[in-house]
Length: 206
Image 1 (cartoon, rainbow, N blue to C red):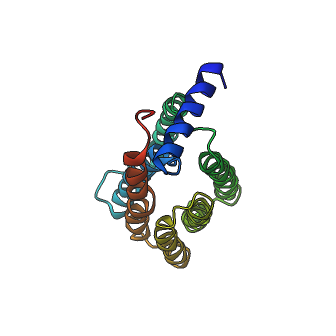
Image 2 (cartoon, rainbow, N blue to C red):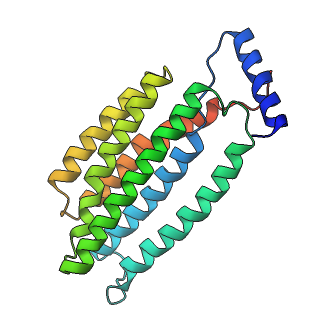
C-alpha cells in the first residue's frame, strides 16, 4: 500500500466515523461479474445439452468453457486493478471479505481440477456436473461469513438461497435442466447482491 493510498484510507475512515456509518464492502463488482459470467455460461451449456445450439461434434462444450476461462482471467485482472484504486480497502470488513472469497476461489479450483481429472482419467462425461452443488455450498458459506463479520445481515438471505440451490444441484446434477437452475441461482445469489453492494461502494471521501 502506498503512502497516498494509506492517506486516502485514513481520510475515508474519518469521513465514515463522522457520519456514523460502517465502511461498505468492496466485493460487489466481483459478485456481479461472476454472477453474470456464470449465468451466461450455464445458459449456453444448457442450450448445447438440449440441442438448441449446435454441438459441432462435441467441441462446443470445450470452446464454451475455454472462452469462459479467458473471460474470467481478463475480468479478474480488471477488477483487481479497480479495487486497488478504491478507498476503504484496509477496513476490517473489506479485508475479511477478500480473505473469505479468496479461500472460496482456492476451494473452487481444487473441486474443478478434481472433476476434470476424473473426466480425463475415467472418461466420465458427467463428472463436471458435480461442480455446481459444492460451488453453491461454498458461495453460501462465504456469504454467511461475510454477512456476520461485516454486519451485513441482509446477505444471509442470499446465503440461504445458495444453500437451497446447492442441495437441488447435488440431487439433480445430471439433469439438463440443472444448468437452468444454476443459471438462475447465479443471478439470484451472486449478481443481485453484487449489484446491491456495487451501489453502496464509496465514490468520494465525503
